[in-house]
Figure 1 (cartoon, rainbow, N blue to C red):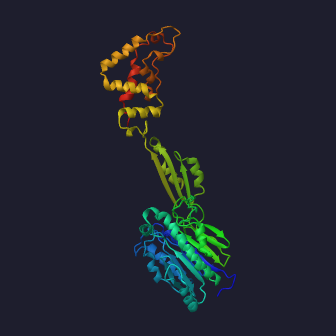
Figure 2: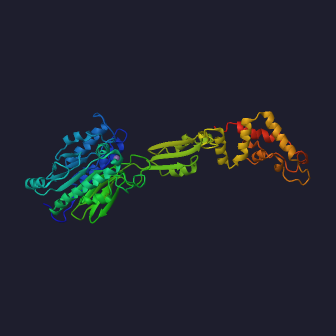
Figure 3: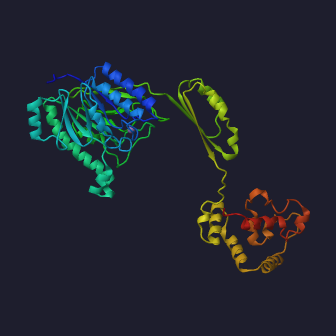
Length: 486
Ligand SMILES: [Mn+2]
């Protein structure tokens, strides 16, 4: 039916996300893409999932707008629509689209199977792949199909978890799909050898792909590996789900995401568009046709926004969607003039201001509240502040076991037992203090109340350093009775 070297032109759209909130963006971009695909002579249309953003009521203008575009497409080409993520496209959403074909039908792929396109009609396999008897009947009735699709809509992990066990459900998805794709590859190999083109269509994550925010997706619980997709022996593998356009090629075969049709979120990098595929045996190419997606500009400040920088940015932000984020401490929140910023971006399509205010919380001793006993809390505090714990533990046990008078007597007794060398060139006063208090002297006390106990060079204090001044003991005790564990 096809001459070697003939190219089949396929328009591949994905992640349209029609919804009231996204209607303007989705319809401007999908409308452009549909017109462009028709004008460019595309022969088949594929929508690889997430046509809608969430459950839509029948009266929602977004649903009829989507239906109108698909209907427009079917005046010129058959269209295959694949079931996407259930939260975006609740099962059954696409059923209605089977009814809106104009000159050509809309085929809805909502199970894992294969389907042949023969002279504008879709002929599905009964099971997951065409068996030999089906292939013989199909060839006898329709001749060689223009294209055979292998459809892998969103896989319900809950169903798989029930079958494979919860623990292995995540990786089992990948294993089962790889097995299926390999089986489909055997059948596709037969189709290809007869001259039919083969196209895979799926909605899921390829391990190692990159999201629209530039984040690589790597792990074991993604649906596919690139190798598994190439195992399906498809000339073209058309993917949906990831909103960033990207592709992989191997021996003239291509696996590709067109990405979302429009820019639905701030911070999405790269161009938006649809893929125009030229599919010929061993010589497939896919090129992105950019849609007029909205332009967004995002800037984040670690602190109050820099008005000079914003003024410069604003000159290039007309008609763009602008998001400005900043992080400020609670006490500085009043420094930000939201009205001035909004005025700067008066010519922009939208200005979104997102402030993150850091509350004034002083974490003086992290984890201390989880310690159960007072000695444990003290131990944790010593650990965090780098203070030797033993002298303070002695103090604490003294406080817990003795009354005030006996503690005072003991301190005084220690002082008498350790007289002072009262020379003019006396060494610093610290050594003369009882060892439990010595530990407190070196500590940084909050609010600077714990000033050094002895003004250097003061003869008067040099002469009588033996009595701990109130300026020393009071703040030191404050620490123990203060709201330390808040
Ligand atoms: Mn999506």
